[in-house]
Image (cartoon, rainbow, N blue to C red):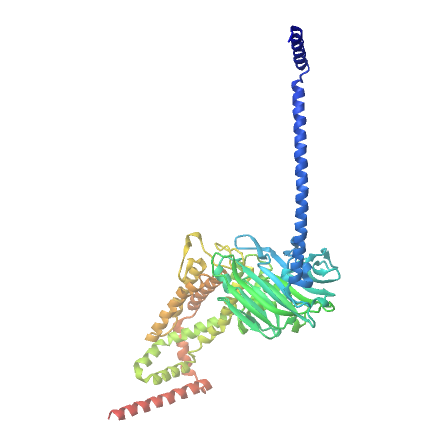
Length: 639
């Protein structure tokens, strides 16, 4: 290679290198090129991802379509004509009135939540009767025309627009619609200021969906009773499943244990009742038959007390010509409120829901209905303190019963001043001649105009009032969460922090009720005063005294768990009785009373014996005669 060639090649290489150096891109151009390259790569990746997503969506849509078709096929095979109702919206429907807060579940179409707005639980939480289908459900059992058995609890209802009727009631309609032309409506008519909800089941063009000749539907109603009160033991004692026959005869399941009952005669209503609140299902045309079941929750920490189940039947017209008319009551157990549901209804058709409140039997219930409750209602109309109301009621009862109390005291006082003469008779006539001794005592009493039973009868006449108050006060919702002195709630036991403990002691629990303690102390004082006013010093009387002193302590263990309103009433009632006794003693002079009896003995003309006394003496003579004959026979046998 010659020199010119080499020089030429070198020049060409140099020119090329120089050209590359002079035309190289700047840093900004390099950065821009990198950005463009990155954008191109990202666009390619995004395009690839989009293509993959489209492919995946197509595959998923195809799978979903196949799955939906398969699910529809399964539902159709399982539920037949009602397959379209087995899925739907799960959002609850909420309605609020002045007294109630309600929620309706699309699944099942029934009330799933009920709150009584004017009340709270013992720990100041909203008072919720139930929350969720698991706590309250009503399932109609449908026998379909294609030979299937399904329940409305499995189906989804469609909520219709909420409207108001011309009386201001809120109308909630949940529709079970297997197709556009056929449906069943659950219609709820809710008052703005009331606890009664009208519940109508209205069918439209559904006859082809039900088995031929369907004119009744079986149903199952299940509900759980929540704990609402401080004392679980007391609340459980009053919680029970009640039902009433059309003749106003009310029955209930056991409060203390699991129980079942079946009735083949019509019933008007069922009530899932706790201490102060009830959920009631009523049928004006009566439920033909019913089976009831009550289960207790033994776990002390459970928020539930009872689980109730009712299986029954309602009339049903698939054509819709005759709706099924029911009523639901979500109500406090207040006598005045429950009785108000009788207004404007023929006597034979009245629900008489006030029978839910345990006021006692026959006479006791009559006293409560026509004396005790009206008196409490009258005083509460212008007084707010229920402690003072109970005090005034006690004072009024004591004043009304004062004549009987005084008569009882006078009878005891007469027996007491005659005691020396009774002792003389006992010394004169030996104990083996008991009948002769008793006859001599009766002759003495009759000669001075004293009846040994004179003190018992007035006390017996007072007993119905005491029993009536005992039945009413623990059931009175008016006392619920009403405070007085140290008691924060007169419907349950009262105590103070230093009188409570964690571990329950047998027969007494984990607290001491102060009013119950005061009642016991006052009862002991009353017993001492009363026994001092009673004649008699024999062995039988001594045993009676021990029994009388033992009773107050037995009452303490019984009443320690009871409502403080009741123990407070008994405390002040006994206190008034003690004060009355001291006042009687102050105004009744025993010496003057004895002189009066002796004067009556001297001036009293022989009177004809009463039929009872004559029969009693004749019985004593006959018994004495038989006793002598037995003694004579024994003597002859020994010879």
